[in-house]
Image 1 (cartoon, one colour):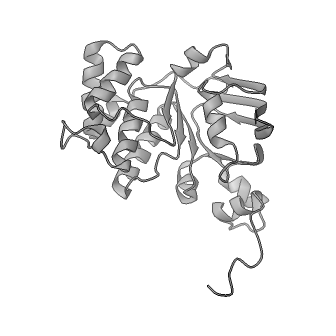
Image 2: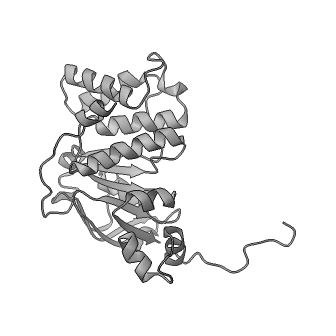
Image 3: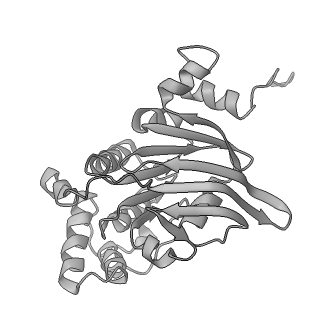
Length: 269
C-alpha cells in the first residue's frame, strides 16, 4: 500500500507566492438571505487549511463558489491566481472534490466509476484503467469488484469519492466533511493520504465538525459564522487569543461563534 500511495504523491512544482485560494469580501445572497456575507480568507499553497463553522455558516456555499457551481453575488475569488468565474474550467481541472453529499453513480462498480471520472479529466484509457485499479486497492475496495456503488456503505462511498478526487492528481483538495460516516480504519487511511499530498505540495481545504481531527491535521484554521470569518490563525495563535492558554479547539470554536449559554438542561430531563 505504501508503494501505491507514493505513486500518487510524486513531487509537484514548488509552492509559489500566489495563494492557493484568495477570497475577498465575498457575498452570496439567496432570496434576501446572506449565506456568505463579506467573507475574506487567504489559503497558502501547501497548507492543510481548516474551514470551520456551525451549520448554516456558509461553508458549503463557499465550496460551491470555489468549484464554479454557484455564482457569487459580490466580491472576488481567485484559485492559484486565476479569477472566478472567468477561468472556472481551468480551475476545476486543478481541484479534487469530496462533497458533503457523495452523489455517485449507483449503477456503476467502483472501478467503472473511477475510470469514468478519469476520462472526464482527459486521461487516456489505459492510464484511467491503471489508476482506477491502483486507487481501489489503496482504499481497500477490492473485496467484491462486481459490487455496485449503490450497495456501498456510507463509509465506502466516501472512500470511492476521495479516490475519484485523487485520480487526476489535483493541486487543491476541497474536502466537505470527508470523514463523516467513515470507520476509524478508513478515516486513518484517508488522513494519511491527504497528509502525504500536502507534504508533496498540494493544498487541502477541509470542513469538518470533528474538531479533534481538525486540531491534529490543520496547520491553519479559519472559523466562520453567519457568512464571515470571526477567527483566523494557527491553533497556537487561537489559543493565545482565547481565554485560556490551554483552550481546546472546541473551546475556541464555541467562544468564536457565540454558542456559550447558561443552563442547557431541562427540569424534567
